[in-house]
Length: 212
Image (cartoon, rainbow, N blue to C red; front, side):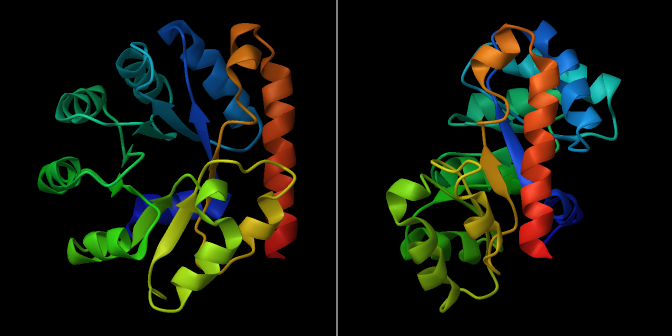
């Protein structure tokens, strides 16, 4: 596991963020940092992603800023140009994964089957996104994958929130949880950054208690 994933594992939470405007990035980052969670996966679901990543890397160089929902080689190039420290994909696209490896960018591709896990292992990847987590068997599936793939760590994302966060993070093969429940679009759009800080603190507290 590379150093950036070691850092992410310490927090146990990866906020998955969709921004309507690049200007939302700085106040959101401050809210995350105030919560003690300097991690952000800025998704390429909007045109704001590249400039938001660039702004965060310039303003908060110590923050762990990655690009999410990367589905094209053009987005890989844009994410790298903006300074993304890691890339997350919803599925396992060999072209995108190989491009990231060639460029030296840490990549967390999405998987939900043993065959896809083995595609990752073939490329030397031992940290994989499990998506969509709840719809793909959730905790039972992760427990089943642990047997044959004990050296692989997962970042389950999709259908996880405070109700089931503890059950996921307790699993030995879960490095961190990806989620958007603490950084919802409406909270960002309405400027409720204090609420975002509170929700992130709550999530971190659940992780710490579950790991204790």
